[in-house]
Image 1: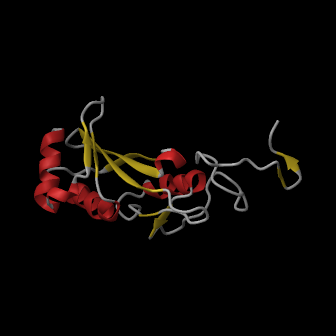
Image 2 (image 1 turned 180 degrees about the horizontal axis):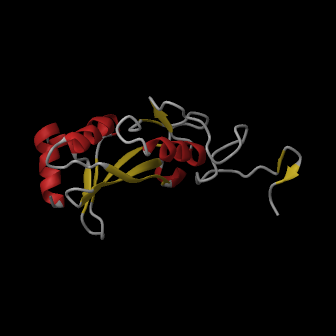
Length: 165
């Protein structure tokens, strides 16, 4: 299926409001969907006989900065049998300081999402609601902050060891 057919199938299944935005100006066209619908949409794309997106190639997070006040999670999906791909995005508020943004997990759909979501949590501070084991994966458990956020302030020391050189 091409991008237009995939988009039409989602609209047919979930209604006109399922597509918040689309970008067809880049090499990989993408759709942006509502945060609260991401798990349902991914389950549909995985389970539908015409789409069967059996591979979550990548899940990544993006901080658009305090100026815009938003963050994104980007899902790169691929169907091995049908050889088609789709980029699905969710856009959400960065929330207030000290309160982490929350989005639904897709780890129950693709097992690969388990570590992808843990990495996004570890480095960006995004809580994936329903994740079976959401904890840091790269940094020590007692690390302060989320280093890939635009407003991150690096610690001077960590357990007496100088961090900045």
